Each structure stands twice: as structure tokens, then as C-alpha cells.
Length: 324
Image 1 (cartoon, rainbow, N blue to C red):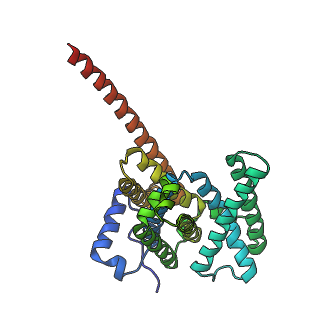
Image 2 (image 1 turned 45 degrees about the vertical axis):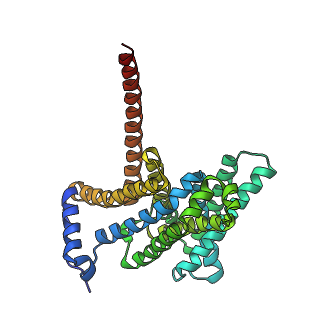
Image 3 (image 1 turned 60 degrees about the horizontal axis):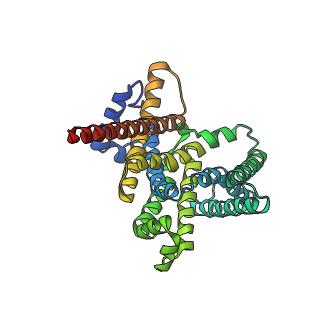
């Protein structure tokens, strides 16, 4: 059935939210047709929330560089599966996730092997591994698809090409990540801070590590099918980095990560539509989301710095006044 004119056509930034929430509360999102803006918000929300669940523990474990490497090298595993199965678009989410997990573990092994064999720093070995595997995957992918521009779409994504079929995979990913986080929360927290102590309590450290790799891989697979590497990596790491500045506990860290992720998931499509309406200029929604997250981090960091600066000065003034 052909869609009618989009209710989002020509709307401004604030009108975008009015249209979306009116459609949400009227039930049109559940009973009527979904437009590209509706799909973008739903997919972005799913990816951002699943990224917050996994990213919290990646930041706690200081695995941001590893996540960056895996976000690029995971493509190598997906391409290899496509080569062996001779299928490019019909592979199941489970198969792609297993391939991503295998590549994530291969990446970790290669980083460890190069670091210890050639006596280089971990940052150097990480850069070497993800550059090598990502370039190999792009070469193989171009060989398979005969499309030399596909690498750009994989990195930046193409949110305008999202369809209803992209909603189901990211929904499965967020449900899986939420279930793992809820039921393994204590084990994840304990092993993130002190693996030796966690092991003494009987927590299976290796299994917890695999769960985190599974969460990371599932997030990346869902993002590859929807919006590319750049946004997946941004939603995995940046919200948790922002939350770490202001959070006082692990639960608040995850809660603030969700707040910043969800806020960006709404702001990016709204800004993209507003710019298109006002200037007839189509910008990458994924790129806009990364810009918003970066701006949030800078603002929160500045506020935290000045709040600490003024509180210290106020304490000094209070001490001097108490002496008199």
C-alpha cells in the first residue's frame, strides 16, 4: 500500500516533536503506516538503549579502544560468512551475531599476540589489527558487491534507507542486552572492578567476558544492518563517558547513559528533518547524532569543571571567614 504525504514534510524542529508524539498518543504509530521519520526514531532508540546497556561496562572496564577496533573488524567476520554461505542479504541475525563474536575474539587474540610478540604498545597493536582487518573486509565486500561506495555507507550509515524490516533486528538486540544486564548485573559490576575478587565469589569470569563480547557484537550487528559503524560506536561509548562525569553509582551511570542516548535519538532525526525543511539540505542523521553526543560531553565536562572550581573557592572563603 502506497504511503500518503508524510506528516513530517516541511516541519520545523519543534513541530517535529509535536507530530511524532501526536502520532504516538493517538495510536497511529501502532495502527497506521510508518513513515521514514518514525522508523528512524524507533531504530535510533533501540540502538541507543542497547548501546547504553553494553557501553556502561565497556567504559568501566576501559575497553573503549577495543570496542573501536571491534566496530571496524566485525565487518570482516560478516563478509567471511557471506563468502562461505554465498548469501548477502538473507542471513539471520543469530548467524551474523555469532560471526561478529568470533571476529571480536579474533581481534582480541591478534591484539594480544602482536603486543607480546613484537613488543609494541597495546594502542599500536590495536590500530594495526583493526586497520588490517577492516581494509581486508572492504576489499572483499567490494569484490562481492561490485560497489566501491559501500564502505562509506557502512561507516556513516544511511538512515534515509531504513525500512520496517530494520526494526525487528534492533528490537531483538535491545531485548537481549536488557535481559543480560538485568539478570547478570551483579556479576558484570563485580567482575568489572575486581576480577580476582569476583572469581573468589564463584562468579564465572570467562562467561561474563563472553557476555560482554556478545552484547558488543549484537549492538554492532544491529547497527551494521541499520545505520553503520560510526553511530554504533558513538552510542556505545560517548553516553557512558558523559554519564561517568556526573554519576555517583553504577545504576545512576547506566540511567544517565540511557537519558543522553534517548535524548540524542530524538534530537538527531528532528534536526535532520528541520535542516531539510529549512534549507533543502540532506545531512547524515548518524553524523548529526555523533555531533550532539560530542557537544553534550563538552558541555557536561565544562559544567562539572566550573562547579568543582567554584565549590573549592567557596570552601576556601568559608574557611577564612570561620577563622575570623
